[in-house]
Image (cartoon, rainbow, N blue to C red; front, top):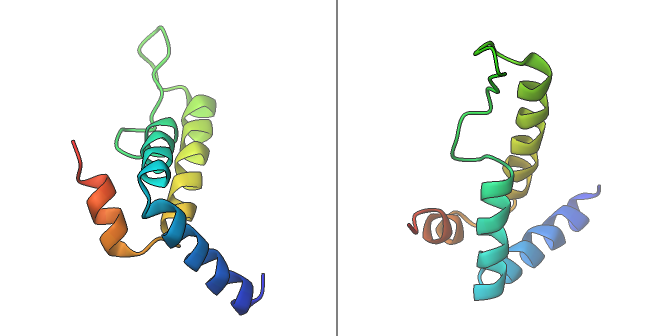
Amino acid sequence: MTEDKLLQLKKDMDYIFSMTEGANILKTLKKLCLFDISTIAINNNNDIDPLSSVYNEGRRSVYLSIRKFIDKEILKEIESEI
């Protein structure tokens, strides 16, 4: 992706996530992508499930990738809400 496209993507994300609807979507993604919890998966035998753990970490990486584009003040406001 070119630098111009990356800058436009950042502007677009800042615009979308600064609105209530965008903030709600980001909060949902945060939960779905396991941002705030451990990505280590435990199976029924109380052993670590490496495949599920890797899958969960992949989910988390999606949120982390999106997060890089969003203004820190917008993130602080959204992620600090309880």
